[in-house]
Image (cartoon, rainbow, N blue to C red; front, side, top):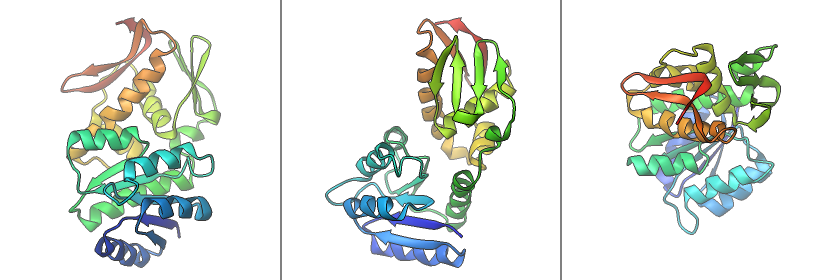
Length: 236
């Protein structure tokens, strides 16, 4: 199965996760502080990292940033598992580079679903990357081979999640796509309380797309209806 690194200074959480993940057949490595955890990540290159925020010396946000900035660990999925559940905490977590966010106390079944979804992404090509041809609509051309979108002859590098979100919007361009649909298509689940996950990633994606033309926007927020891709862009 998969190698999973858990970084948390709460011994009871470490033991709970280790027992339950090992029952699923995973190889679990643990660390009680961020500095050692980051070193282990570089050495072991796990398929998934489960990371707490509030830890001594170095907090989880900083650890996530270091993981993303390091060329050997930058593509490892990160699940942030923490007692901090305010919107600003989640936004900071996603801004630091984590892929998913789960608040303590949590249900083990939900943890297993999220772990499974993240491992599926890390072990196999996302569905959007299996498309053999380049996809074009309006100003937008998706290039699956290198996770790039071309807008007006400008190449923009995307993360795997950003690429999958944009690909989903391209397939439904002109339509309002609910956040719950994007969560299900990209993450593999659609919990009602995780809409801010999509909001943060849409914000990052929108910023990248608008670099090609600061006077246009390509993703429109439909209040109560989700998001709609406008392939030719509209004036801001």
